[in-house]
Amino acid sequence: MREDTQLSFEFKMISGKRVTADFSGGDVTSDAGVLALREITDRIGIVEQLADAIIDTRHQSYVRHEMKALLQQRVLQIACGYEDADDSDYLRTDPGFKAVCNRLPSEDDLASQPTISRFENTLSSKDIYRIADVLIQQFISSYETLPKALILDIDDTDDPTHGAQQLSLFNGYHDEYCYMPLFIFEGTSGRLVTSILRPGKRPTGRDVRSIVKRVVKRLRTAWPTVGILIRGDSHFATPELYSWCYSHEVHYILGLSTNSVLKALAQAAVSTARIEYTKSGKPSRVFRQIRYQAKSWQQEHRVIVMAEVSTLGDNIRFIVTSLESSRPSFLYETAYCGRGRMENFIKEHKIALRSGRTSCHRFMANYFRLMLHSAAYVIMHTFREKALTGTDFATAQFDTIRLRLLKIGAEVREMKTKLQFIFPSSFPLKDVFATMHRNIVMLR
Image 1 (tube, helix red, strand yellow):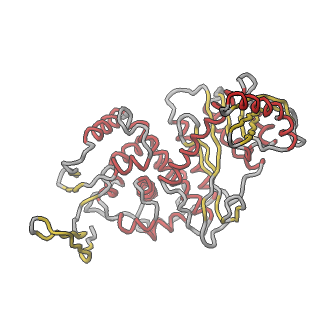
Image 2 (image 1 turned 90 degrees about the vertical axis):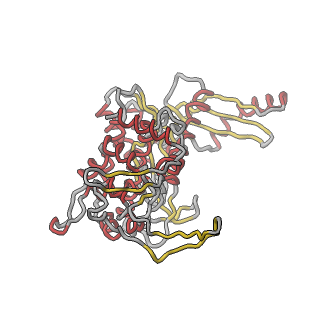
Image 3 (image 1 turned 90 degrees about the horizontal axis):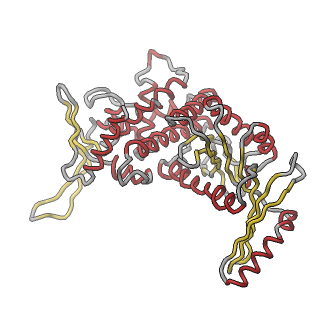
C-alpha cells in the first residue's frame, strides 16, 4: 500500500506529551462497512449482470482489470460517498475496497483514475440500452411474489452542467445549462425502475410515451396481469400518453396545467370554498369533478378540481385521471399527492449518491455515470430493505446509513489462512452491525 509520510500534523499536547498525526498507518481502511455491501451486491447479482451487458472492446492482451472488477470498484466507491473517479487514485490501494473486489492487500492494486475514465468513455448507446434493461430486471427480481399493482412515479430533475458537454442545453425554467435526467420509481417502496439521462429540456409527449411504453412492455412481459398506475406532474400530461395508456389498460393520474377554460369551470368550486372560509375563518378546500376535453385530446377525461381558499388567497389545482371510481378528494389528497415521496427518492439518488457528477464531455459517458449511480442506488436500497430490517436504520436516509454503518475504521491483517478486519472496540453500533450481518446471512 502506498504511504504518504510527508504529511504530519501537530495538535495540542495531552498530559505533557506531543500529539502528532500522519498518513503512515499502512493496511487500514475507513470504509470497513463496505464488506456488508459486497454481500448484498453479490446476492442480487447486479454487477455480474452489468458486466454481461457491456461489450468489452478492449484488446485483451493489455487488459489488467476485468469488467466486473471495474464495475464493482466504481459502484461501491459511489455507494460509500466517493463519486469522483479521481478518488480511485487513492482508493485503489485501500484494503477494504480491494477485498470487495476479491483482492488481498498484497495483491495487485485496483484501477486508477485514468483507467476508470477510459472505461467510462468506451460505452455505446447499445451498451446503455442493455444496462437499462438490467435495472428493470433488478426491479422485477426484487419482488418475491407477483405484485397485484404498481404505482410508477415519473419525474425529472435538473443536473447543472459546466463547460462544453455534449447535449447540454439552456433551460429557461431552471435558468442554467443542464441535463434533465428522468427517473421512474415504484411509488410505495422507492425501488428504482429506470433512469434516463436527457438533454436539458423537458420531454415531449412522444418522448414520454416512448419511455413509458418500453418500461410497461418490460413489466408486462414478466407480469402480464399486473395493474399499473402512472403518476406525474403536469408536464407529463400529454395526449400521446393518454391515448397510449387508454389502449394498453394502463391507468394514470397526472397534474394538469391551468387555462382560461379550466378556470371558468372551476368557479363554482372556488365560490363554495370562499363561502366556507368566510363562515369558519379557517382554510377551506372544495373538490369537484368535471368532464373536460382540450382540442388536442381525442376524448373527454375526468378532471379533478381542488379549490382552496385561505389567508393567502385562492389556490386552484387540477389533475386528470383515468380512474373513475374513487372520490375526488381521495384522488387528489391521497392518490396524487402521494407522489411527493418521489422527491425523497430523487434526493437519495441525486444528493446522497451525488449522481449529478456528470462532468465528462461525451454524453454517453455521462449517461453511463448516471447508470453507475443508479446501480449504487439499487444496492443501497436493497441493503436498507433487507439488511437493516429490525433496526433503527430501517428507514434511514442513505447518507445516514453511510456515515453510521459504512464509514467504520478498521485495521486489516492478511494472514496465511485468513483476512481479518479489526473494528474499533469503541464502535457504538455493534448490536446494529450484528443484526445487519445476521439478516444478510439469512438471505443466502
